[in-house]
Amino acid sequence: MEKTLVNLTPPQVKLLKEFKQEGQRSLREINRVNILLLLHKGKQAKEIADYLDVGRNTVSRTKQKFIRDGIKAALEEVLRPGQPKKYKQKQEAEIIALACSAPPEGRERWTLELLTKQIKKKESLETINRESVRLILKKTNVSLG
Image 1: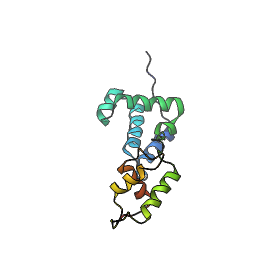
Image 2: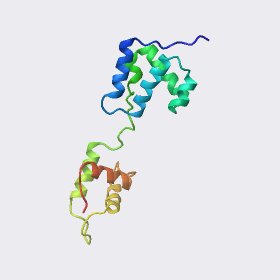
Image 3: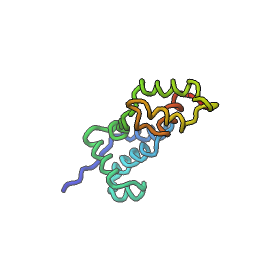
Image 4: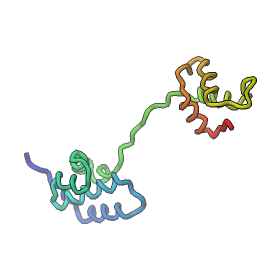
């Protein structure tokens, strides 16, 4: 099988070197720049992987992105959507409203455990846990103290 070489033009080499030196860059971005520069120098994927302490698949994927889509695509991070939100704004508003209301009789203030027990009684929030309640309150700067 014929190996595809990475031949960078002088402006591309200059762009990569400047990219590496400007601002704060993640280690992944720096590694991608170094992979392209080392491939341009004729280094093998195994050598590059060992030298940069990355996987050979990382070298291969970076090379393929460069060949297929160009230099910008090879350097950029692909956005990852993450886990979808489990609770909608209406449900979060109910939790916040309860936390801001007066505590149950015999208590001075709400605790996370107490809030969670109370919230679990509401329809569509039966499966909520203490950590989810804490994160919702933290996100909106609601203090129980």
